[in-house]
Length: 337
Image 1 (cartoon, rainbow, N blue to C red):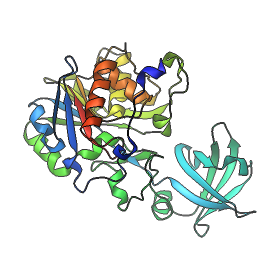
Image 2: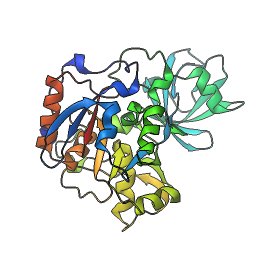
Image 3: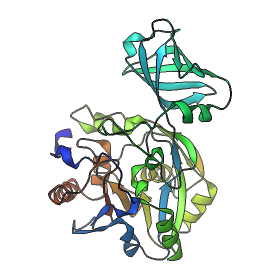
């Protein structure tokens, strides 16, 4: 039941800004079998990794997808959040306030460099729009858009790059794969020097990641769908793994477990996944997970509980709260091994 995944979090522990140095975050290491906890600093995660282990990272790149514009006819202020590129210039967006929008509405952004025509209205504020512009869309978004920070972050992000991983490569996410935010280029180099292999997968994170589960019976929850890619190079390395495979983040986990769900080995593939991982799930792909601390009643909390147990995870969260760990996107990290 959903209420079993609830916990009380003091507001002041929700991290509002990133630390000056990414890898200075606190790290809570947990033995997934015993629940034993050890506290440390993220930059020392290398001490818990062995040569021949593999770290799997999600190299998606967040779009500056939050746009504030106005309707051409009434000049009413409209916010659009670009969620998914359907094809060409057709986009699925989250709109606010949707009630002011109708099929045919034109919204202008900036000086009209970018416009959006509403083609379809759906439930929960979702609209399908056609973007109208001249030039290169991503260059326009860099000028007009801002990072789509989660709703629990109320402070302005001074440096937009801090909501990207240092290895972000493939544009397409509406949210950052936040477990990766703790890594610096320097730390990644030290990890490689130790003989640990870095493997990159891609999963474009949608806002559904943050949506609360609204049914009391979690098995009735319908998971959001997200686009992923596993390359042949990545599949070959994973199939020949001699050490342990550790996923960096729940998004990397979802890619790997999706691929292994119906295959004996890792196979190169791409597509949309709506895999829902909760206790009782049998992991086939990963041995452990580097992750942040997740929202109460979230699918992400259920995923980490599946890797260990609900009781052990909630005990770890209780420890983190009592020891003033920072929570959520810009918060501290946890290594479940």
